[in-house]
Amino acid sequence: MLKIVDLHVEAGGREILKGVNLTVNEGEFHVIMGPNGSGKSTLALTLAGHPNYKVTKGGIFFEDKEITNLTPDERAKMGILLAFQVPPEIQGVRIIDFLTQTLSEIKNLDASEAYNIIIEKAKELWFREDDLRRYINVGFSGGERKRLELLQALLLEPKLLILDEPDSGVDVDSLSVISRKIEELHKKGVSIILITHYGRIFGHIDKEKLKVNIMRDGKIVMRGGSELISMIEEKGFKAIFGGDNDE
Ligand code: ADP
Ligand code: MG
Ligand code: MG
Image (cartoon, rainbow, N blue to C red; front, top):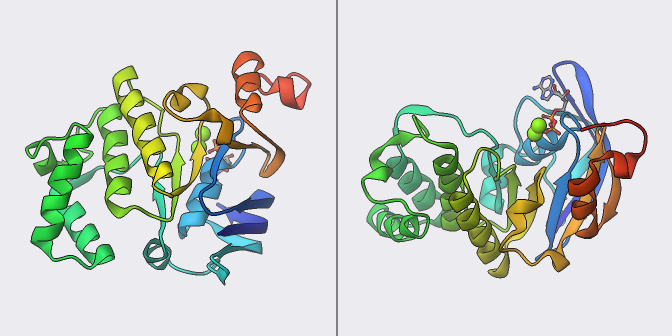
């Protein structure tokens, strides 16, 4: 489904990804872990087509089509969704208006159909109709931001969902609902790439199925199953890389 081949990416005048190879087959659940600065978010943003990240070598293929040079919009229409690590605050744009517009555009629904679907789904993530009239992420808590990202994913039901640290800055209760919703999406057939530092996000997720990829210095340097997550949680990356890397 997704094939990343020898991907080299530059941002701010220097090379950040230095030859990433990753294949995600339909229905797979991939996890990416790695120390701060190893290039995880760069990979996610590059997959989404963020204009600051320039592919200098290699390519990205989705369902046998090369997407390396497609716009974020074109990728979204193909079914790739990135839930942002730190979603921007958008003063003056109400959640409900934003979601209604995106949903009706991507799924070809009229606005009132889209509206009703949004209100229903929002309840599953603890949002009331009132909450949806707030401006996007303005004054939101960490948990609210992440639940809003998940709501977007639940509504759009992408083919491939990329989650960049959905567990950062989130309280225990939100974490639990986020974990459950990710598992729900995966069970519906959504392929997932989840970037995280912590095993706690997998509370409601069957760990046996996880394909874990470890990044270091712009490359994937190790692949395995959930045993890698436990190992990193217990002993840090030095258990894997050796030496005195404390991250
Ligand atoms: P991670 O998500 O693994 O913590 P990032 O992908 O955010 O890592 O960053 C990897 C490296 O690339 C860091 O050194 C970071 O400062 C740098 N970097 C990321 N984005 C940019 C950018 N737009 N311009 C310049 N440097 C960047
Ligand atoms: Mg980071
Ligand atoms: Mg990051």
